[in-house]
Image (tube, rainbow, N blue to C red; front, side, top):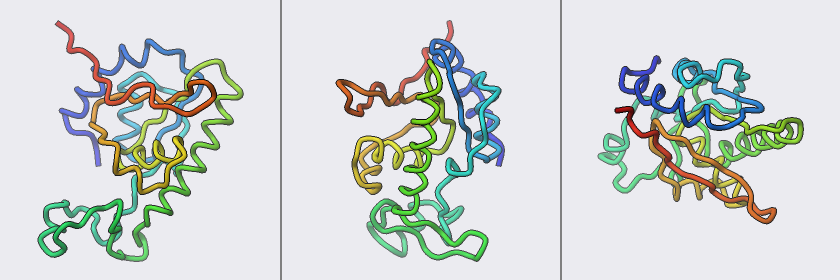
Amino acid sequence: MPLTERGREEARRLVPLIRSHRIGAAFVSPSQRARETAQLIGVHDARVDTDLREWDYGGYEGVTTVEIQRTWPGWFLFTDGVAPGPPEHPGESVEQVGERADRMLGKVDAALANTEGAVVLVAHGHFLRVLTARRLGLPPSAGALFQLATGTVCRLGTEHGRPVIAGWNIRATPSA
């Protein structure tokens, strides 16, 4: 599924934010819209990594939270999971997404050890929320605590050797 025009505009606005950092390595989800976002923000040499793919929503693929909650009041992805789907999209538990996030963080750490610059990840909101929780040493379900807006940059870093959120939902200021 391609980006919407709004998504393209949000991505273009991020270019100055991305350019303000020295990029040492970049990884991108295999999805069309993530790859398009990477191109639009000026990250042309990002390595496609399947660990960055979107959460497999199984039987809930394409179904909104409101629609799910009509039959399961109070349903919440991070605590209640997904309905089983077809063999090609069986669905993932939050723990399985956490395992992917842990693998990705290992790749990020390896890249950081071999470069002077930042590592950029272009991926999907739910996955990145789980990845953030894991980087902070929290269980995957703690991704529920991080609201992540589209068209924003988030920075994870360290302070005194401990993982921290250095910036969250950073938006570029619209050009005048």
